[in-house]
Image (spheres, rainbow, N blue to C red):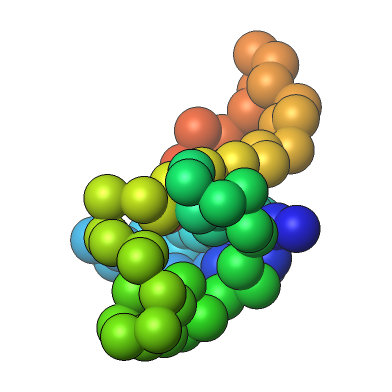
Length: 86
């Protein structure tokens, strides 16, 4: 099951003396053990499995898939392209 690593947000920042809207997209991460198929709900849980001497899990068994969800931004002739995506 994916977990949210970063929520979507907008904020105004002053960059080079201009107020710019900064957009941070929603980032979802899925961590999965490629050997067992187990999915983890956090980086800490995957690390604990790797560090657990009672499992055969190695760092190379962990797959990290990142899904970045970016909203559709309206663009037109009068659009101020002073947006900054981080």
